[in-house]
Structure formats: structure tokens, C-alpha cells
Length: 237
Image (cartoon, rainbow, N blue to C red; front, top):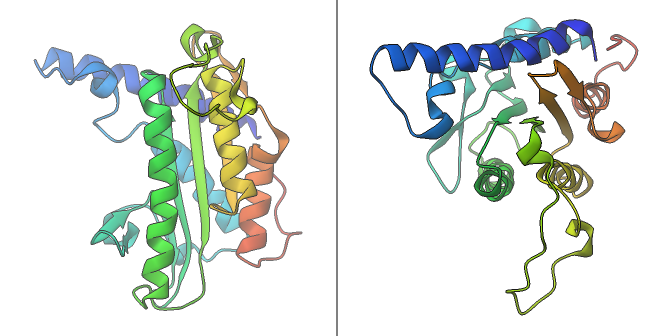
């Protein structure tokens, strides 16, 4: 991962805090950490850098959309879905990329993110199957998950004994950071998404960790490039 991207990840947490402070000063109090994310801007720099890397790999700049109507894609189980980055030439949908960040409420968020990620991928696949996206060719689907690495997300969780069935042993003795990694690994392995980037950021320690090589930014860009059928030799991340 380039240093520029590392700094963008760290700055995204500065932006979250400033957004929360501004809303508090205005007398607006969202629930929990929503004060830090409702401005919707904390991931903009990361989106811009991913878009730039896509241009460098050979994607035409005019086909990359990060705002406005260009990021809305028809769904099958819902009317439309807004992605963070969409690659489309107006006739063919070539890629959809979603970015998510989690900085608290890890127990609720992990279940929500699993259901959300699978639902988004299934929805766009059915929309394509029913001729809503201009082509039967499946776009490259990509997923980015940024998790805050703090004491709560890294604490080992106790296994539940309340179910009639045992959970997959892979989850035993794991933290939320581990479970998000497992989630992302399986999203990739099961071809729910063709490219997945999972990164853990500790803004207090100014540290960044990519827990699995297959989920690194380098692998993310490589997989994205390969599924867009571009020349693999054009870009070095």
C-alpha cells in the first residue's frame, strides 16, 4: 500500500472527529458514532485514490463515477442502490465498489455488514439477469472494509452456548477484528465479490494493518484489474 493511501486512512478518522464536533457545536446530536459519519465525507479521499489507481491501470477516467446519478445502479429486490464507485460507459456496467468503515458497536455491525454485503451483491446480479443494467455481463464487484483497531475490536469473544447447533469452529477464540477478516476472506473465496480490501486502522497509535495478504490493497487492485480484463502490467501499487 502506498504511503499516500495510509495517510488518507488516518485522515479519515480526523474527519470523523471533526464532523462530530461540528454537529455538537450546532446542537445536532446523532445517536452514538453517527455524529462522526453522517456528513458522508470521511471516505472521500480514499475513494479518490482508488479511482486514480483505476485510471492508472487503464480504466477511462470518464467511465468512473463517484457521485450523482452515476453511482446509482438498478436493483431487483429494491429500486436502486448507491455504490461509492461505479464504472460504466453508459451502455455497460463494468464495476461496482462499496466502501464501509466501522468504529464501534462491533457486535451489531458485524451482522449488519455480512447481511448488507451479501444482499448488495445478490441484488445487482439479479438486476443484470433481468436486463436492468444494459448487459448480461457481470460487473466486477468489489468491497472495502475499514475497521478501527481498538481494545474492544481486538478483545477475544466468548463462544455462545445458546444455540442448538455449534458455530463454525473457525470463529472460536476470535476477536471482532478476526471475524471481520473471516467474513472478508469468505466473501472473496465464495466469489460474492471479486475484489476485497480489509484494513484495520488504529488512529491513536497511527498504525495500519492488513491482516491477510489476499485482502491487502495490492491484491484488491490486482483482482479488480483482472476482473476488468485490463493489462496487468500497467500499474504498480
